[in-house]
Length: 222
Length: 313
Image 1 (cartoon, chains in turn blue, purple):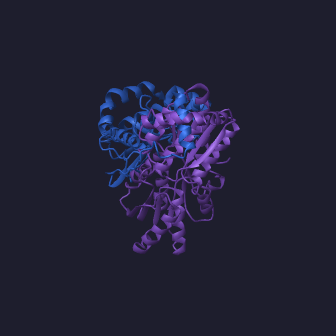
Image 2 (cartoon, one colour):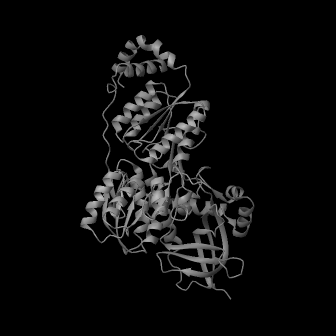
Image 3 (cartoon, each protein chain N blue to C red):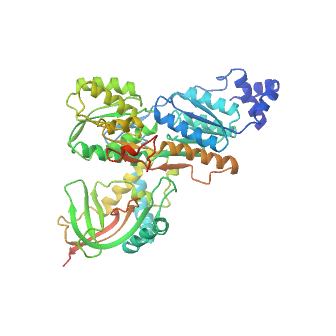
């Protein structure tokens, strides 16, 4: 069979009959509206909100609770061996060109809040020196895809293309914002905070930028 | 190929079998098929793949499909006919390419896709693409910052048959649309083309002289737009691209275009060859088929370290 294919292909070239076995294919066009603009290959039959909603409580939260390491321990291991920290407390889908996504849980005090943006954040101090040790996204707009990328049971391979994969990442962020960030108090600075969240391990030792999965804000700390 | 054609070909093939058998004894061949090398991005990919393949002892066949799915289909046929052991492909359409790659697979030839994906899995041996959504968000965040979170802007979109055009536009809008004072006044496709972007930018400018920024789906369109803006004396307009080409690097260093997003194109092409080599020798890449590689923001701070789609240290 391989021989026949080889010979068949050979004859095509040799006799110049390039088009004899080919079907004419059309350059495709397909677009649908997403967030106000037409995005090509945006498949409306795929419902990422539903997917995110259905897995949030039964799968995502238990996985993250199991995977999370205490912030201090995570930080120490990152300083010592970032890949080991990644393997222990995080996940990445592939080795080259993908950063680790680290899962951590922490308790601290809110020392600053940036709430004039729709992508609001709080700065959290964990060691009591009143300096921020991490920045935490509190939405309603959540940047990045750290939540999605931290899940070892979600693979890019399971999605038709980058567009569906991106939509799922955004839906997961929205699901989190809806279930955990909806009723935060307005005066945040000075309150205690306790959370489980995910951050991308950057090459430079920058302050972690955490996307929470669960968050609870307490009273003002003394 | 139809059964009739197969029989016809098989019947006639005996004549040529001996002559062609001889060439099959040479070094294993890898076909490298990309869009036109007019865009330095695709040239860098082809060069990176060729150099790596030759370093590993392969012969290479470098071809361009000019974003024509029919031409691509013919090139795949010739790669099959030449007995290629693997095909490195930056493809001509996310749907249109599926059949062509399947055809190669049926002929026992694995395809390693780079840069652009196809809307199917299990057909190519690997699809190694830039994390375009992550990259587009980086570019958009920089654009928002440069624009001071307000003003009228234009978006130049890439070729519709390429999911990269859609995903970058989605990444841009998922970020920019959070800022109600940023208003998109025109959104047009310039099909990744520098000349088309130049012409479109000229007419966009005439109709919308009040624009403050242009965000472009790739660097060649950003270069075209910048040339039109410069010619019209509008060097005040903020332009942000995507790719990380040397042309845009030079423009950033000279104070023209403000930023771009580096796709690790050269490394991506090398990686495809490494995975093809592993597949040829062992029958598997040992990796997931679809692989994303993160992008990096390039602006005035790090542009000088950019060379041929890679950051030097």
